[in-house]
Image (cartoon, rainbow, N blue to C red):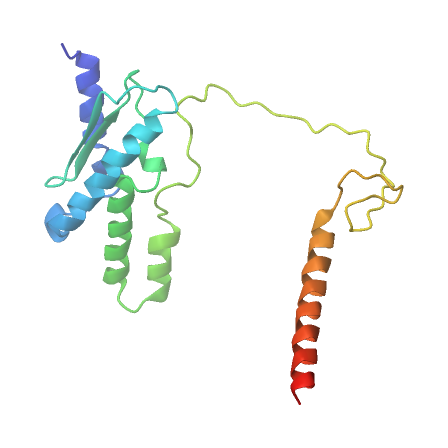
Length: 191
């Protein structure tokens, strides 16, 4: 039997789209709304993997009304508005497109439509996060006067790779010079 709490969470999720941005569903092609719902139903289980491996209790989306539900099996509900490719994301981007269209040729207005109303992943909060921690950097035993020659060894002759990027860049350049020189010599012999 479905509990009152689960029903309440599902209803809260279903009206969440209208809490942020709203577009008239009739102004969006049905095939677009159906694609938005497919995205929503694909994202919900992925977000629920942060706290559980089971299927979500509610993973619904109504393309006719532009409503959705996403309740994980453990009862947690991720803040869908913080993620990309969710129904709120699509509604928000459509709202921004409509806002820009309403601005006409006013570039400042068009800019504000997008800049002041970002959609999707800005700084998502994981649903399983309980507190934040700070990791302090520690000093390693590497000498501060270390010199790297760029060829994968340090100035003391250690064979431990240190900076192989310089050696790779040198190899790329040298290899190109060898190939170009070979082609030039080949053409010179033909003449």
